[in-house]
Length: 311
Ligand code: 13P
Ligand code: SF4
Image (cartoon, rainbow, N blue to C red; front, side, top):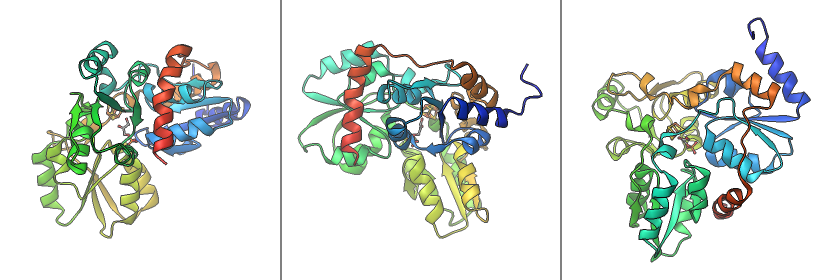
């Protein structure tokens, strides 16, 4: 039994013994964010994974993020505290169907959101994250035909923002789909003048009300620089932990779902990781990410294209 263990002390001991680095996404529970060696958005986390000299990467995030770490750092042991930590965007894009979609549009390249399986990365030309998509898109010739998947909300946002015609795959993130425009407007009426910062995985009806749209890191930077004292945050609410730490005098309110509060916007996949499971993962070096080498090399090509073009 793990009861009676000082989990934080045990995790710190194992991290030293294993020469492990603990990476965490902003959507993780506060206690996991607080013990991580590095907390970041998807792009920063993949850069960290690519450059670390640790022997073990313990990834507090979802499976596609840990897979990305393994694809970029194949000689490292990559553990994910809960192997069931998937992603609804990944689930909405089965590789066989994506391959058929590509085959039906042979004159298009596939620009693909990092929230997808290694197989779909292997079927893509360039991976993007929400913080790198606009930079990468701007480097592609104006007449280049482009498939964008799996997130139709991010794709729609990019198409509106850049004026480019993107052929969209119809996937969504269940977390960002759950925000309610009606409840958001009610909340805004209660806090006149409070800006709204939103993640581009939100549908257009939410983004239309946003004063700032960007990745989790972008939203955090906006929170550190906006002049007022109250901010409405339309993304997974665990990111508010970093805002409250950095700006204890300000008020950060998670945008509501249809029930009027932000609990329904907690990512159920991210929430699977716990202190107990991280401890066991560092102790047993399980569950471990393994990717067949041919697949890894196919997926690495599109990820390398992102890391080069995002600079
Ligand atoms: P970013 O951290 O890149 O903004 O991604 C958000 C997200 O939903 C990850 O699953
Ligand atoms: Fe996937 Fe949405 Fe969870 Fe991010 S918040 S991991 S996109 S389900």
